[in-house]
Length: 49
Ligand SMILES: [Zn+2]
Image 1 (cartoon, rainbow, N blue to C red):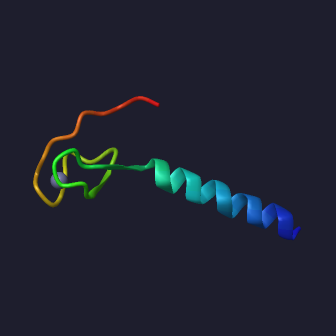
Image 2 (image 1 turned 135 degrees about the vertical axis):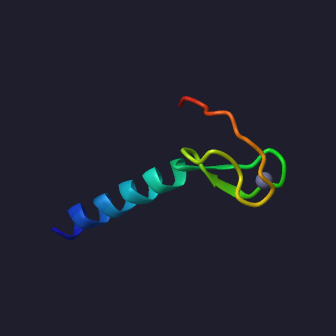
């Protein structure tokens, strides 16, 4: 039971990490589905995989 919960939590974190990428300009964490960086306005190209 505990193992299952821990596995779900780890998987959730991995998905969360993959949902963000670093801004090429300022290095800020930018949500992959966002139009661009919130900090500097740099528009990021979507990367598959
Ligand atoms: Zn930026």
